[in-house]
Image (tube, rainbow, N blue to C red; front, side, top):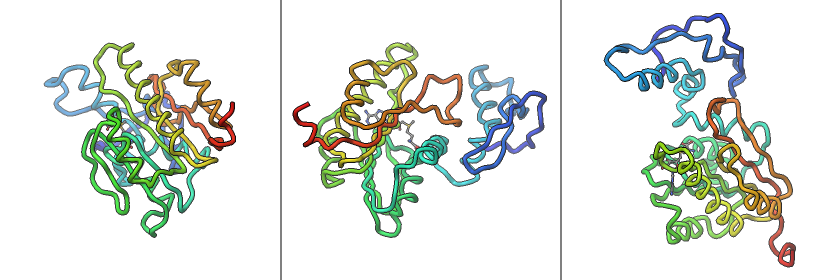
Amino acid sequence: MAGKGRPTKGNSGASTRGSSGRSYRGHAGLTQTPRNMRKRKASSNRWIERQLNDPYVQETHKRGLRSRAAIKFEQIEDRYPFLAPHMRVVDLGCAPGGWLQVVSERIKLNKGEGALVGIDLLETDPIGGAQILVGDITEPEMLDAVYKAIDGKADAVLSDMAAATTGHRPTDHLRTMALLEIALDFAIGILTPGGTFLAKAFRGGAEKTLMDLLHKHFEKVRHIKPPASRQESVETYLLATGFKNPESDADS
Ligand SMILES: C[S@@+](CC[C@H](N)C(=O)[O-])C[C@H]1O[C@@H](n2cnc3c(N)ncnc32)[C@H](O)[C@@H]1O
C-alpha cells in the first residue's frame, strides 16, 4: 500500500540508506496522512500512517517484493553473506514469500541450481523451483515432510516465524522463542558442516540454554538488528554461522 500523496520533507528526519543504496529520510521526516482518518480507530490510523511514510514499504512495492521482511533479510545477507549458488535452503514460516524471493535469486534457483523448501501455516504463492508446504512446524510430521523435501540436508535454515500475538507480551515472547527452539533443533539435525542458521528472536529473549546450544554447534553467533527492523520493536535476529561437523562434535 504505497502512498499516493507526495512525501514532503520534515524538519528532523534523520537520513537512512535503503538496501537499494538510495538515501531515505527517517519516519519523522515524512508527512503523508491516511484518508478518511476520522472514520478509523486511532490505532489503525497510526498503522496506516506509519505504512504510508515507511520508505521500506515503498521500496517493497516498487521492487515487487512480497514483504517488507524481504528487505530485512537482504540487509542481513548483504552484511554477512552466507548464500551462494547451488545451496540448499529451508525457510520456516515463509509466507507471504519475501525471504523466498530473495533466497531464490541469490542461490540462482531459476537456473536449476540449489534447492529451496518453505513451510508456513498460511498458503504462499508459488516461487519458481521452490517447494512450499502448508503446515504447522510444531507438528513433527510437518518437519519430517520438510526434511524429506530437502533430501535431509541443508546449507542454511532460516526462520522468520513469529507466534500469533495474544496481546499479552510475555506469552507472545515465550511462544515465539519456543518456535525458535524448534527451528534450531531442526537445523542441528539437517545442516551440513559450515552451514548457517538465521532466526527471528526477541531482544533479551534468548535464554542461556539456547545461546549455549548455539555456541556449541556454531563457530560464530551474532545478534543483528537490520536497519529495516523498527527500532521500537523488540524483534532481533540471531545469525549462527559455521555449523560444526556433528560427527567431530559427538563426544563434547
Ligand atoms: C513474519 S512472517 C514471515 C515473513 C516471511 N519471512 C516473508 O518474508 O514473507 C511469520 C510467519 O510465520 C508463520 N508461522 C508462525 N507460526 C508457525 C508455525 N507454527 N508453523 C509454520 N509457520 C508459522 C506465520 O504464519 C507467518 O506467516
